[in-house]
Structure formats: structure tokens, C-alpha cells
Image 1 (cartoon, rainbow, N blue to C red):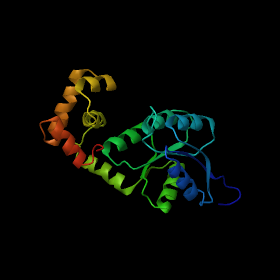
Image 2 (cartoon, helix red, strand yellow):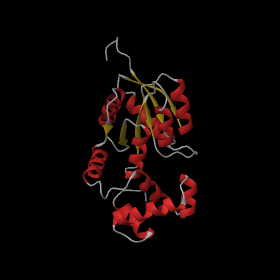
Image 3 (cartoon, rainbow, N blue to C red):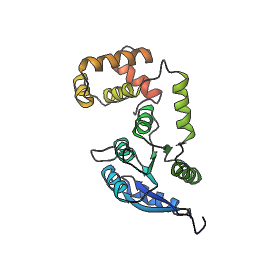
Length: 213
């Protein structure tokens, strides 16, 4: 980086102190990066992104609080002149990927990415370009190749809640849908997965990496 260039200003959002410390150590070896702040909560990420001059937010998806990473991403990217959000997580299911991209994430990377891949993704995201891990790009391409059998964003959301043990009535309240609509989604899910029960649908979707275990 030359003296006339400004560094890429970063915010780290992850609820594990060891992960934040490790990320900071790796990223600060790059002379064109500046880690401005870090936070342990999604709410903190939203607040800091609104107050600080940032280029990229590195966002985990799972936090201990009420707000999840995808929701925080949506709140951050909704603002005028918002920083780019690069999701950095251990989750690679369709449900997580679709939620993050729909929320406005510029990139999606897994935590086992090597340092050089992480640095390249940060630079790509800062430039406003899509930065997807190869495995994530492949999953999205597979969805595009088989649209008739790919679960929609809402269907993966419903099925994840089924896997979490929620009843149709509870899913209805959680997603602000009628119970008839929830049942309709389940019918479509069964058809696409070639199954005839909730248990079989969860098992099939888990095996295919569509939802979390």
C-alpha cells in the first residue's frame, strides 16, 4: 500500500473472543487492512456499523443474543452508504447461505478458509464485488441447475424450524404465516425431497446440507 492509499477499515463481529483475537492477528498482518473495532454481539455490529467509518464488516451468523447475523446484515446494508458485509461462519447449509445473501451480504466465507483466501475475500468485498467460497459458489450453482427440486428460501426456513422441533402452529406464529400456508410449504417440501413425513424431510434435507443438523 502506498502512502496515498487509505487502508480497508474493518469491523469484526463474532461472539467468541478467541475467534476475534485470531482474526485480528491474521488481518493485521496485511498492511492495507485496519481493524477499527470488534464486537461480541450482532446488535453491537449494527450499532458500530452505523457510527464508524467502515469498509467491510466480517460477520458471524450465530450469536448468543436475540439478533442473528443475517438479521444484523440486513439492518446494516439497509442504510445509505453502508459498509459491505462479508459473512464468515462455520455454517454452509442452503438455509444459512440464502438467508445471508438475501440480507445483503456481499460475500460468504467459511472459517476454515486459509489466511490468503480471507484477505482476498476482504479486498473483493471492499471493492463491492461478490466474494464466495468455492464450496458456497458450487452450492448456489447446483441450485440454479435444478430449480424444480431446489427448496425456496421460505421452504428452507420452514423446514429448519421443523428440525428444531416446532409444530405447525409454532412455525405459523414465528414466521407470521397462516397454518394453511405452513402446511402448503410442507407439501411442496415433501414433493421436492421425495418424502412423505416431517421426519423423513428433515433427514433428507440434513443429508443434502440444506439445513443445519
